[in-house]
Length: 146
Image 1 (tube, rainbow, N blue to C red):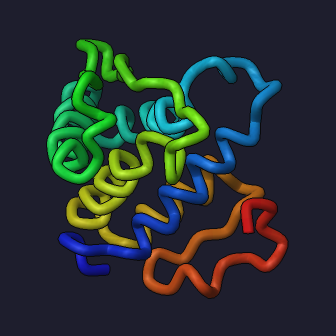
Image 2: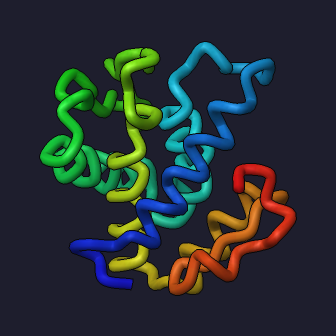
């Protein structure tokens, strides 16, 4: 996957955020969907890279994402690795806020741990969805977000 301009990461990020946005009655549903995606990634990534490593990775992803999505300007990474400051989506938004952040996080993961491990990590968390970072068109046909 080309890390600087990866439509695969963007597509998967969009699907993850849409999936979490669709979990409206789940606990934490009042939290923006991109934040829920980040929270679900936090535990395994903190195990892999440590809490400080995860925080640094998320902060870098946020810095890169702010260049493409100005709705992230007020977002910051808290000392515990959680996020705060994302505005709630409104009807005028083209897509759910935070997709650029999740896409950048996926791109960085691929750069640091590779496509296979990144795909495995995402599939372990969202086991009812199927992802292929090299060819997202090959994803599971039973994917409810498609």
